[in-house]
Length: 105
Image (cartoon, rainbow, N blue to C red; front, side):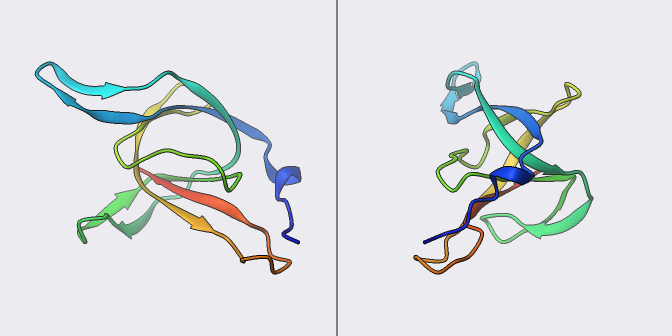
């Protein structure tokens, strides 16, 4: 059985999933509110392409949370940012705090 981190989820962000590009720019899906723990800390991370980039914030949310690279995220204070990557932290049934870790620009 996995452990929930629901008690840590004190923040709410809005995620608009990246759908691709059009002739007029990026396309996004409908905005979805996501309960999470928001860690606003600047750190260096690797993008999916292997480049070293600066992340301004990290979201920790339920394991089922989706937000593909390029998705638009609105933080609680209204700042709009973009998903660099999302990693699933799943203990595979071990008693671990399973969650999704999402690095933001």
